[in-house]
Length: 379
Image (tube, rainbow, N blue to C red; front, side, top):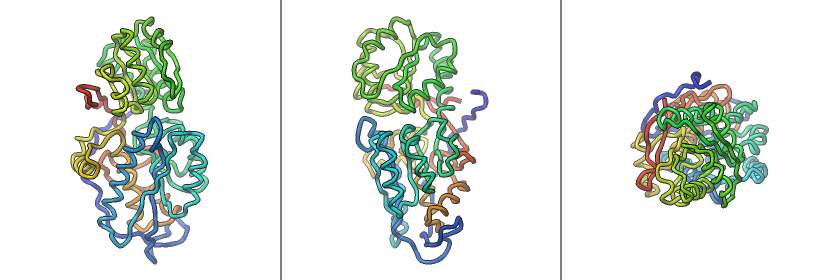
């Protein structure tokens, strides 16, 4: 099915211009178009701020926070706040945390959930409550197939990333023997299964590890014995960094290829010198492709935007545009997001009937010189 996937060029624009202030109305889709200003609204961030995958959540939170800071500079008389819901990336904690967000009636929309597993656990509650979510990072394709009216995604899913990773392995690495491994998570297993399907007969072995695992000696033995020239890993950076270090320490000479869940400096920290040369795929934009956003982010946080910071920024701006347009009830915001059609810093923000974005691009990155650097867009 790869031939059906469109990889469009990224759209780079300046930060969204926002004007006006939300107004209070009823519960209908057209509510909030007139009346008293409603200035106690909050946008929620739902994702890991602590725990093994916290870096990815913090990236998104900072992007959303920047959007809100810029909005508030232009609307000093009617401020919006960011409310943080730290899931720790836990599927088991997600439902109760979702209820907490739902019960706070000032929360008009959710940037997140950040990960696929917690999305699967929390999104049914958000849907039932009519609280709109825009995930900047959860990529499991099945999330858009549940009929959730409140689900929207700001990036391409793994049905684009998996084939893109397989294409890079075949066309750029020229690997003919590929080992595929995942961490058994909703995200990691899903991505690995798609890549494996697209790699077809090139796959000479598979294995599954667990999150929080630290000893990968059994898997290392399997990979070395297989003669694999490349290893595709579906999972997150904490385990991937330890895995690549143990592989290289054992003498494996192949190339590690990973998905967006590993695209973080935490991987380099855990893997050390062994991380060099790793290829990472991500349906996310390199920072230098959105220079005005990159500059504003660096001024705010003294660092370049990292994985999904820009997607978090775009997601928050959809809600902020809605507030500026007077959509100050959850019902009104949902209808507004359904018909949203504006340029963001990563792409045109427009969603189909299932909540998927209208534009998708997947990039390859490489660990070089102790940094993650863009290589190419995978067409």
